[in-house]
Image 1 (tube, rainbow, N blue to C red):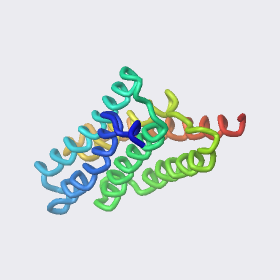
Image 2: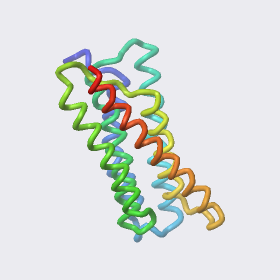
Image 3: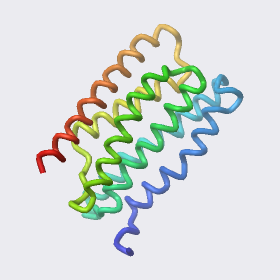
Amino acid sequence: MKKNINLPNFLTVLRILAVPFCAYALFKNGGNERNWQILAWCGFFAIGLTDFFDGRIARSRKQITSFGAFLDPVADKIAIGTAMIGLSILGKLWWIVTIIILTREIAVTLLRLIVIKDGVIPASKGGKLKTLFQGFGVGFYILPLPSYLHLPRDIFMAIAIALTMTSGYDYFKKVLQR
């Protein structure tokens, strides 16, 4: 158990613990106050940035653990899921987008749990790119952007959906080929 207690895993747990604060900021004053929107964005951005660093630290220090390999994508899903559900409740993101992305995320997580006895399925490059696009895409919905940036924001989210579906297909394909 001690080998699971390292800086990358600590940062992953810290990311999960930061999510409620981000959700609070997202909903504060009905989700329409500019300062709270920016604070919510900063919180979710910090979570995403920490995700980037915990992976780099784990690889550079050779501190990759099964615990971290499993919990890292779960932390991503908790953060992105909280942000997307919150944005949909606030009427800022279409529910269909949230449903499509979260259905894929839940399906891949269940797949990982089903095959965990055969070893953790690490995040693929496509999965990492998907996470990056989801994070920025959701961030563009959290930020109080001027209306002329709504179309580019929506196009960015469409790309995130395409990457989400493609990487989900790849995970299932890998498992079926085992």
